[in-house]
Image 1 (cartoon, rainbow, N blue to C red):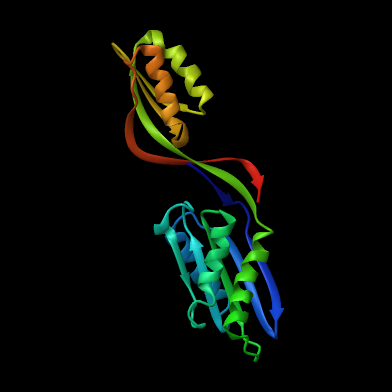
Image 2 (cartoon, helix red, strand yellow):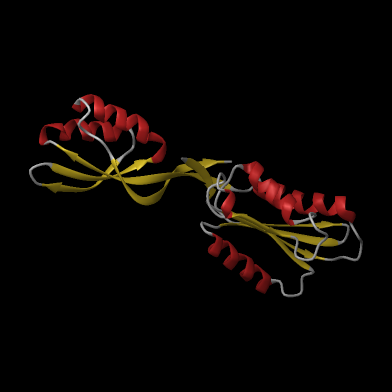
Length: 214
């Protein structure tokens, strides 16, 4: 599984009908990190009327790492449209906070949705990204004669050998991209006539690949 994460922070301000909206975007690899960022931004703007926020604090496919808050604005007018913009970007590990300083003119529910969602949408245009791969750890027992072939197959699938234990057989501890495991397992069975099989070790290893742009 792969997904895109932000590599920079963004702070963007605009005035809409005399209200100032300041949008912050930050990398948040966990819910705890996202909440810490939100709290910090609140401390920076103690006199603001609202501190609305939304986050995807992990994979964008994981429904258990989503959160949002209207922070006193009418229900559904701030946090949810902010989250919708984050989801539309396909980014993971990101938190958005929009700080509002009320300017005395009511925007109405439609105006608020447009203002909060639009603030995040515009800020997202300034985000740079990287691809995050989720790596899984596996153990493999093999004969010495198979080692070179296994190393070649691993290289083709972006796998890495973490540890080699020598004995009557060789035991390899490997990290493999989750998306490549099935194809790699088939190749291992083919070269060994079904004798080689991957044994999962319950641990995920997130890694970051080279940069790209959203």
